[in-house]
Image 1 (cartoon, rainbow, N blue to C red):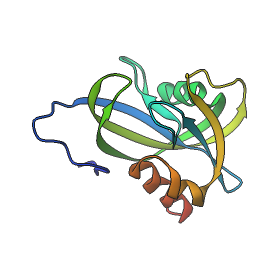
Image 2 (image 1 turned 45 degrees about the vertical axis):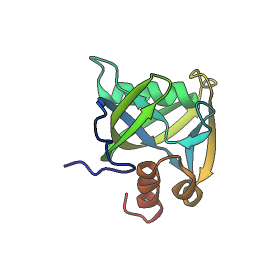
Image 3 (image 1 turned 90 degrees about the vertical axis):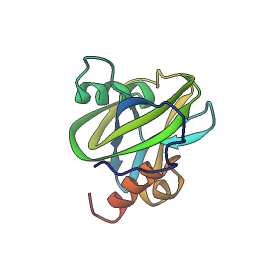
Length: 148
């Protein structure tokens, strides 16, 4: 069973399952994050949905590049969680299945191409407090406490 973070599913709401991949990118005591401006401003682990037929690792590389402009290497699976949320950009109630990896940030090669996203660095301790959802905060906390 995959641990749930955030609100419980609402009665009578039909949720669409949305598998996605997200990445902890530590370097020198900080995490490379993305700041998404819309639909509300929040810091997030870089990542997103897996396209139909796409391998999760390919999706991870693509999503990190789109949201941060960085290349990464040596992704390693560290866990997963699910959360139930409304995604206004898709007008969709989603059960997000979030698979979390840790990888090495190599270098920036471009500006983020995902509209409204900005790459930023934040201390791991601050990320464990300020990331936009409790699942992301949980995994940043595990990293902070040496459990990843």
